[in-house]
Image (tube, rainbow, N blue to C red):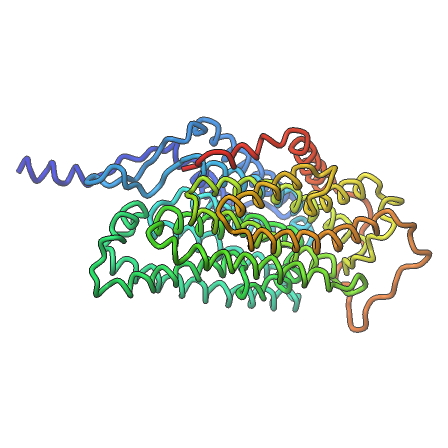
Length: 513
């Protein structure tokens, strides 16, 4: 009887609540807001937004006691080194990125939730997605990884289509939903193949077992690896799985487009890094060249499409940022491909670049949200003369665009690109470094062109809207305080990083696992 009792006890795992605090607090606050929405009167709905921001700040604060990066929980009793949740440095940095990105998205959304969007549903969905995004980089088994990915993705579908009666929003949500569901189906099939071949879902155990797969299951294991990687390629919007991006960004509320461009990408790249570097290092000769080719195709397709955007086309500013994000995704893929040849030390370059990109891209979308208040069609030509009417916003936008281009004064953008470029060279991927250099030159043209428009003299009259285009939103003047705060925060962080780039570039110099 004693043996049986001991056997039962050994199955009960202790939970380190501090380790799982960031995603847990975010999820709990989301549920509290959903319940509170039933009882809070309409005139006090703005308090829900304040509660959401407070919850995200609390989740960010709980990262501080975890900064040592050596905690784990939900570990196997038979193998304590195999854990389902690990708060290492990689997980903590990505959690900082996604929770910080969600916080800035919340600031940009405060005004809209008071007028156009259902507050309770919006804050619940945003926090639910952020909780899944915070869970994913700490996930160390395929089951938790898939669940976290879907918890991050499913609320995002609803957020994109939350503007009721908006045809563009509904179409964007449908395209996003169909592409993501396809990615999930492909990935689940790959996960099932990997489990059938290795008999485990834990990433470290998969890495150990994949070299011992019986000959008759080797093809099944390789197919599982390929399908799993294809699923994550969808999530990262890598070519040829990128076609949903521009229409989804245009149809979504601008803060949600900003959220998808940063947090959505962080989720996809985190999952891709975990399965390649930790679970499938034995197949590096397969996924390394494949990701290198994907990186080249993705950066080229994104930058060429951004280059072709007409300044007078409706929503061309958002479309350019969307295609730019595809091009930036190509740069983010380069160090992952390099890791196949030189080890996981290269992953730090992706993390450093992602942090830079998150700050300046969120800032660019924040300025776009400000401009959209008076220019609802958000054309690039609408930014002409912005310096004359909103000089600080124009200076901030110019800084963000130059950082994305990798030009001074956006020093952090330049250093981040050099770090990524160096990772390709060190891995012997000279051809990929050349492709990246060409794409950086292509991107310079459209980033500088938009920057120049900001400082031109304003036109005497507003350019007419395109035929058939409708200004769906009322024209509003003035800069709401939350939007101003978001622009100032991103600009200040960007300037600090440009003055002291070691804050993020140090991640590129060491292993995060």
